[in-house]
Image 1 (spheres, rainbow, N blue to C red):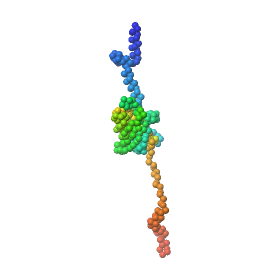
Image 2: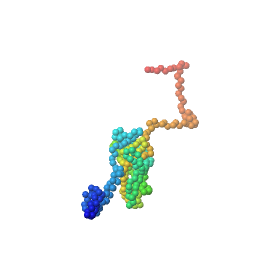
Image 3: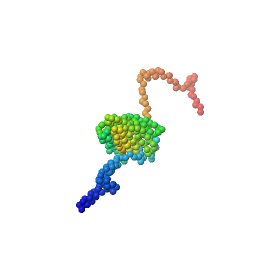
Image 4: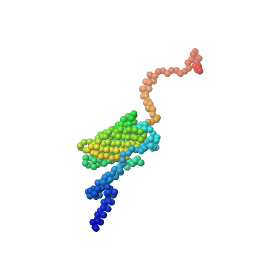
Length: 290
């Protein structure tokens, strides 16, 4: 009788631990893995991935100008935003921009970097990016795209690898699709071989007043170091998208020296007399014909 009770208690424990998946498993699977640890590990991994901000297409691209923000497709054209991005990026050529992890709603930073889990050789690590430098800006007006040369500041586990410049294309397809993607840049993270890093950035927020560009990113590594991740980040450019000055100042007049003034007076032709002409002592006044 005691054996029957023990078997019933064990069965209840197994059913409680494995929930409904217990009935979908064979007797051999239950004997080999009573608590279904393999399935639990898969579920935990899935839950961890859900918590990461996934890469997704923005619903609306919000643009701020003159201290007002509005969806791009309601008040602006793709040509306008392309020209504004050109001006913003050209104003920040050869400048360093800060990168931070941010929330999607308030567009506020909660970390002064973005991080993603990677594996360097056989060692688990985290890769960090906290800034980038815009080294070159090249325009292609016909395709509404901007070719950029970016240098990312990459670190991992307290080390700074040597990374090559990144050739990036920023493309304004329409008012719902502004994408920044690269060809992949090389980083020397291990003594053997180089690692290729590819970045995709889907822009959904542009602040022309303060120089912010926000969006969803996805970064992947391939090579001796591999891994990747996704999330939401902000790029803070040091200079804003300021327009050209409407009233251009006239150049300051340079006063001639004393010698130059005397030379100019000597070379100047004699001034014509403005006195009215006379004939036999009588002053002649011209007659205006109508």
